[in-house]
Image (cartoon, rainbow over all chains, first blue to last red; front, side):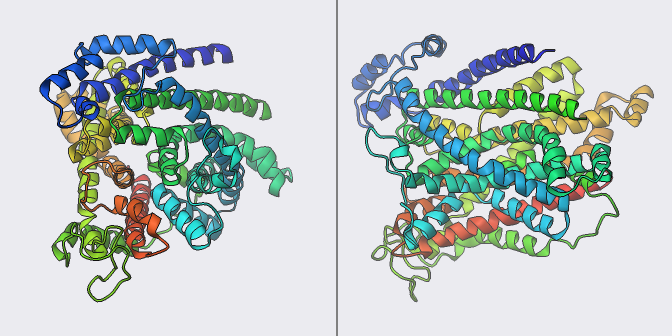
Length: 316
Length: 286
């Protein structure tokens, strides 16, 4: 199967999954009772007021019909308007998602080289250093990221006062206007990311190091950094990248949490605010957008792993 | 959260061949986990003050009356720490138990039915697994505001897909083995095979898997508390205590440090124990 056909098939699969999951999200937020009407009309609204609000929001129609409408709108890029502040959901996503992606990109830029070197080192050396790094990674990965973030805030921002405790971005500005505000969020996310990625890469590196191919290279006199970078990393990267994309779900969760700790104007912060305000269309829209991002990352991971796999075939 | 991918020890084993080193039993981590769990479960009985009443000025330093000082609203930190772990631990354990039961049932079912039907079931489970765990929690929290039951359901729903996969693979291996074929050939019913061959043989995997899910559940439950989901208001919760008291860190450190350190101790000890258990199951005669 050519790469294009492979990508096409996966893309179709991802699209079907997205529609299915959007239905699940819709069901969980809109069909289940909640109290959307009270959230909008106020808790002490009279029965008639509630009925009016219900009709205004279109909640008197059957759920399947509402979902069909929502889906038709979503295909055209219209995810409806939030109950709170009457903002178009699509606008919120298009302004906030890039901020979150910036955070993710910076985290990746910090995490990838660090995790690659740590993973190679521990996977190849073994022994005491390996056990120390592996255990530290396990410990760090186990701690909830909000605790890591909160401790970082307190130590670096409150006690040492070297960094701002929250990432306040000026109105209408972008996070680039206040680069120092990005440091703590990126640091918190990277701590978690390095811990996870190192563990995955270490396993993969150890597997490759045990192959006859690697043994042959070693017998041929290839050693040290050259062996690690030229022979092991390309072969270990494929499985590790694929495994890493599978942790994207966890990293999306981490990002939501970290954005909330630092008041960072990203999509996760917006989602948490929408949940707190019971802003159902906003929750639906943002959740669906996040799932779409997840699926895109998984797809990319599959394609990357396939490309790296093809390369690996040539290498041997 | 990360534990969902931890390989079941076997891959790590091929990496470092040689005689398996007999490691000491994890007494220290076990004691740590037990200590925090007991504190969380029995703590509410030992609380010296009401955990929700405002008793003094905010952020008072620790003294004889308030052993850990007071928090952002002038409530006794000691009492809140003692009372704030029970819901968290109970939600995580109930959610894990539910996820384990669902995962076991669905996994074994997917292995026992025809291959095609089983694959379809796993496809659906995979689709659900795409949902980030925290997203499931947030979406259900939006549907059922302030409900702890919804939190349990969300934790179970977020972790069960992974259990289903693992247990189906384990059951598949057993079902494909020679002695199951022999048992079926001599006329054992599928029910008997399930009881005598499949379940006993996947019990170890199920135990290990449940331990890993527990780590994820604790993580998720603590985070939900931090984000203010579940039972709201003044009810103490270690996660929420951290978010409430971090802004006052210049004035008093104990109100956020005490719950944060307890959460670290709990998740690290349980995480290390689960890792050891996974190693042991992977190494044993699985």
